[in-house]
Every structure is written in C-alpha cells, then in structure tokens.
Length: 390
Image (cartoon, rainbow, N blue to C red; front, side, top):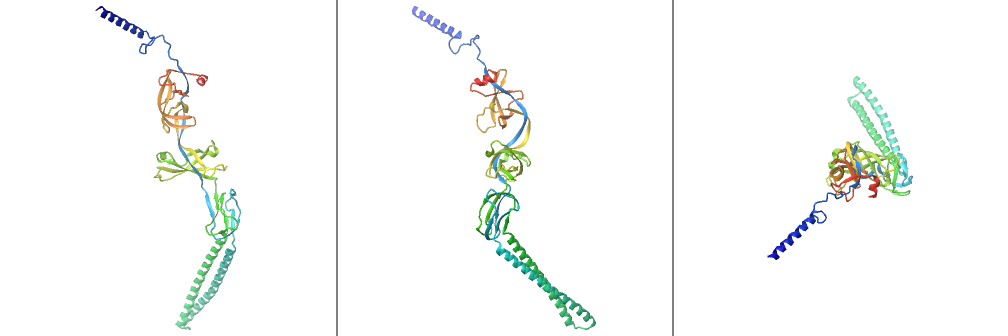
C-alpha cells in the first residue's frame, strides 16, 4: 500500500514538472508566445503607384507585306527577242520600253493591209461614179415616162440600174470597213513588238534574254512596285466588331528591328474563313522611302479605341499562373502589410499593363516580387538601394 501511494506521488510530481515547462514558453511547440519576444522583421519592398492614363486599345495583327502592283510582262505575239533593256533590280517607269521583238513580218503585214484598204477605197470611188450615173439616168427616164417618150420597160431598167449601183456601193463600204479592221489589227500586232511597262516599279525577275524565240504569252519580265504596299493579316472573327476601315495601325518588321511603320485599314473581307474562323484584313501602307519590301513579315496592332482613365501598372508587379491568360495576381501595400489581389489584364504595352479590374486609383503595387513575400506579410517601403541589395 505504501509502495502504491509513493508511485502516485511520483507521477503527479512528474506531470506538474511537464506542465510547468510547457507553460513558460521556453520549450515545446504548443506553448503560449512570449509577450516579450521581438516581433518578426518587416520585409523591405519596392512599390510603384498606380498610374491613370489614356490607354489605346489595340488588336494584334501579323502577316506578310505584298505589293498592290505585282505584274508579269508577257509577249502578245510570237517572234525573236531582239532587245531586253532592263536587268533585275532596275527601276522602271510607266511606259518605259522594256524589250523589242523582231517586227519585220508584222510590218510587212501592216503595209499589205494598208494597201488593201487603198484598193477598197478606190473601188468604192469607182462604184460611186457608177451610182451617180445611174441616178442621172433614172431621173431622165422619169421625165420621159411622164411625157410618153419612153416605155415602162426602159424606165424599169433605169430603176434597176440605180438599185444595183447602190448595192455595189454598200458592198464597197463594207470592204473598206473590213480593210480598216485588218489595218488596225496589223498595226496593233506591229506595235506589240515594242513591249512597254504598264506601271512603274522594279524588275523582280528577268525571264528571257536577247535572241530567245518567243511564243504568244511568254513571260519576259516580272515587275513589283514597293511604293504601294498592303499588309494582309488574319484576325479572329470575335474581334471583328472593333475593326473599321480607316483605323490606324503600327507594325514592325524583323529587318528594321524596333522601327515602327504606320498604315490604315483599307478593307475587311466580307466572309469568315471556315477552317480557322478568321477574317482577312487589308492595311494600306505608304512606303515613299522604299525601306519595306513585298514579302516581308510584319507584326503590329490596330488601334480600335482609347480607354480613358485606365489603371496602369508596371509589368513586373504581375504574377501569372499560366501563359496566354488575361488574369493574374498583384500585391498591394495596405496598413503595413502585403495584400494579394486578383486582377484582370486588359492589354500590355512595353513594360506597362492595363488592369481592367482588381485595383483602385490610389493603390500601391509591389514590384520585383521575391519568394519570401506572402499574403499578409509585414512590409515597409524601402529605398532603391535596400531593394537592390536584398
């Protein structure tokens, strides 16, 4: 009995010791925090004030530049090429003589047609003399018929003579018209031996050289005019409502790095392409300096409107969980703590972001977010030198 009592006393003493140790805050994880302990240090952060500004709302575009004048010069007649005056890369003006085909046979054909026209005109003149004579004979026969000096048969012969002469005159006129058409055709064929530029531009390709034998339709030159370019791009159909002709566009090309070029929307295709649900948009581009070339790739945007009083923050303040998303999170400073806020991004431009929802005008956002920053973390706004050394 004494041994049992002694055992209970020892257990109670041990339990009391354990309770005392846990209650003084010096050992064990479940104790009460020491009120005299030093508070956790504040995290020095760099902040940026929200900016309110006019934000241009844009639709991204990409595509290839193409010339509005890109033509192949082809021969309309057969023959031997006796001259080709331009080489690839040469500048050509409208109506410049590009090449010549041997026109000997066509010149002879023109002269022959001209001669046939002269024969037809002479024949008509001869028929005209016959017609005048027949009309005079009929007038004399009409007078004799009234006085009884000629028989009805003789009078009818005079009438028939006039009709026959008139028919011959109409036939001669038709022959003249036919001959004139032959002359015009021969003249055109002869002139087609001199091949001129239908528009100005540069020689993109020269297909044939002097001495080549051409068939009708043979390509000789290809001309491209880079002074009048257009950008053909595909835009998703759900963005179509914001696009109108006349809107400004800006774009860059890999060739000219960050240099920006401008244009205007000139046409919107009336039909949506069924395979990708996109619609083609054409942008007219001025290129007076000739820096741009047909075939260049371009990346740009169409300005559809301007958002007034837009909330804008630095790009470095946003945390995104997945690519190609218009949502993310930022930290703002409020009452000495970092508070996490979900935001919706409306657009991006260089190092700036337009925030549609989630921030107010007077908010301060934390930039250069580190791994130690959590929601509710005690923070203080630090100078640049502190955040650089952190």
